[in-house]
Length: 327
Image (cartoon, rainbow, N blue to C red):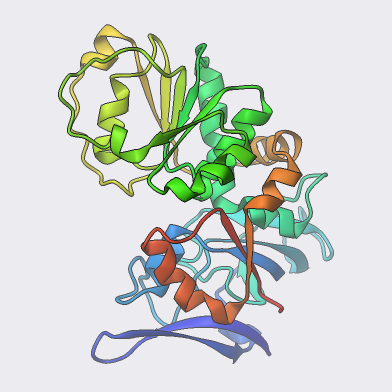
């Protein structure tokens, strides 16, 4: 028997989450059984744990959209008992049982060997948010980052924090956008060279083009903010868009794309090809400074997760929450 955070729905459609003891027979089918050591708290986890269940399709359900741990048993020759692995994406924690458990059984194709230079706790300090941030940085690099500050929206959140630290470590000037003035010192500790107030970018777009200000952007917000900043990107620059917290609408025109050659790059971390996942995790181990990573981390245990799920939906979680599922 082992512990897991199980979300259940009653006959009236009300959901509840509690830590329960379950057995291996409850786990879904898969090629590899993993003894999980750490998971994280992401926005999607908040939706899954919160009232109504959000993204959950079937109950009972174990949330947690990522995890890192040690292979316990494997039917796939690529993995053997004792291997350290990490998993992000593939709708784990949404359509498939996830990381808020001491054990998981998954398809071998979903796993990636933990790269040299990272332990399982560090891997989850990075987590899906950090993995997504690295994919965004890699996309900007592939299209060429222009001279000038690189803007990071939602900079105090999980994706934004890691993107800020990575870009700063690579030598870029980073402008962090935040709606919470009290996070300015935190963003500067990650390497941000300037702080931009969220309200300055959250106004309704009045002109399709403004002064060229940013050499590139990692946007973790979307909506009105994304529409506004498109008109401020330097000629030929790119925006790597990773989030929808500001809404799925884009009240913009084609003018930034036609007259300034701006690239809008969509980043999807869910079903990345294996080679790209390996490349991203190798870059994380190489280019994300571990001292800055540690400054982002808040520890948690399974019993904390219902409240943390509510907090992250309210925008009250800063940095990265690492869940020790065995504590």
